[in-house]
Amino acid sequence: MVQLFIAWGEGGRQHVAVAMDVRDRSSVEDAMKSAQDQCGAPPSLLVNCAGVVTTAPILETDDDSWRKNIDVNLTGTFLVTQAFATSLLENGKDPKGAVVNIASIVGKTGLTNRGGYTASKGGVTSLTKTCAPELTSKAIRVNCVLPGLTDTPMAAGRIKELGENLMRLIPLGRTGRPEEVAEVVAFLLSERSSYMVGACVEVTGGYTK
Image 1 (cartoon, one colour):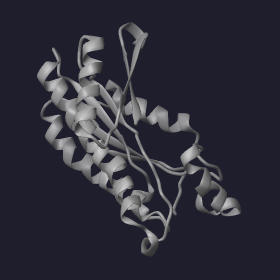
Image 2 (cartoon, helix red, strand yellow):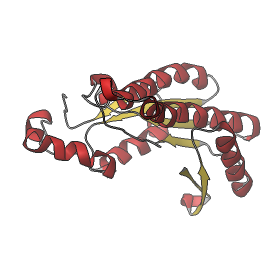
Image 3 (cartoon, one colour):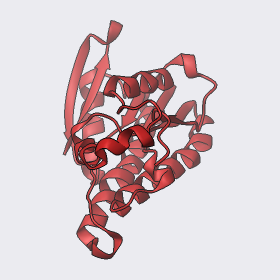
Image 4 (tube, rainbow, N blue to C red):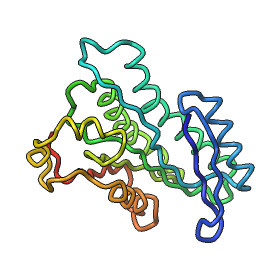
């Protein structure tokens, strides 16, 4: 389960949190309807950031582990985007919106022992590229962000694993901070990025794998 946070009103001063299971269409659609009912209008901005990662070599990856990555990271992004766009186009007075998908640089480079995760994040990038031209014709821009190693609980194991090799892999010599990714997301949601459609922005400190 994840929380869908919606801000509305002047300066985003009012908020509502709605729980959903991004893997389940009914749960996603119910959450979107609940948010719309509470706000009086459908959401116009979306960040797909629900994510999981499992660790195992490809030869030891079981079906459940594989499906967990794909279902949450990729299918969840698809279901929430579809429900969001449908709600906005059917119910919005001004159906103008923006979507930012959180992919990962390892969806592009690959990463040992994380096959399900990297495959799902590569899929998010491809899904972004497909949704972008389809939805921009309906006034909904879609872009994505490819973070590198960022100092979050999900990345803690990888950061510990790298240890002293971190300086060699990341030219900036440190992990990213969550706010450094958030700033890019906020930019892509705003009108300041009005000419960006289908862009996949790397926020990696120069990470090369």
